[in-house]
Length: 248
Image (cartoon, rainbow, N blue to C red; front, side, top):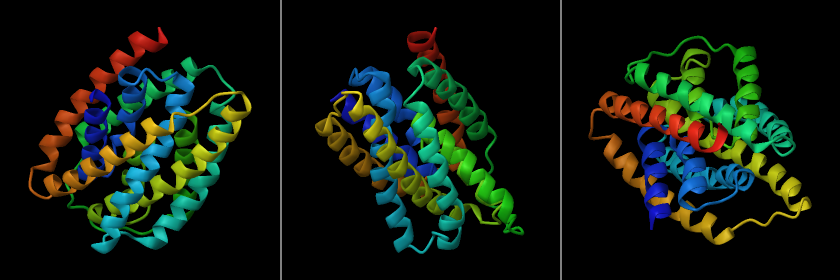
């Protein structure tokens, strides 16, 4: 039951903000399901991929996905995710979790300082978008996060995408990168004799999808900036907890 509640929170975050949900997935698997760190990081990618794909398809139905930017950012992102997963499968999981804690802190600051959806389109910096796609993809693969908190600002500032489009677009990019990253982890960890808990992955994915649907409904009715600041505080507290319990 705790894992299901955690999964709903993951979905709520993705539905409201287009990001942040994957930051919660690894702690849910680590501390509520008691999954080993390397399997938690790998499994989180598949869970986030399913939830993001569902949320992204809902956004696509509302025509708030920029497909050219999905491919411009997503293809380099998939390459980066594969490389990051290759690196993540061959290092101590404590190193991955330390990087994860740093990313949680960065996400917290970005959520706290985030602007409302009043951004106007800017010129597209194609090379920078591609490079960012590679870098964010590598981060995705290495620590098992979707990277929406990095993708959304990149789409707005470098891709010239209005915020409302950036959120929906980021969800599709997260799905693409996460599926590729998981595929690499699956082959590497299976070769080492690890077994994935498909039941847990399915339960949390479904609960997260339900949460994402609710999140999209809530996000359209509540003040986004106040929610972002509350979530930012939660993230920094979670980062301290992960650091104290699993890294130090």
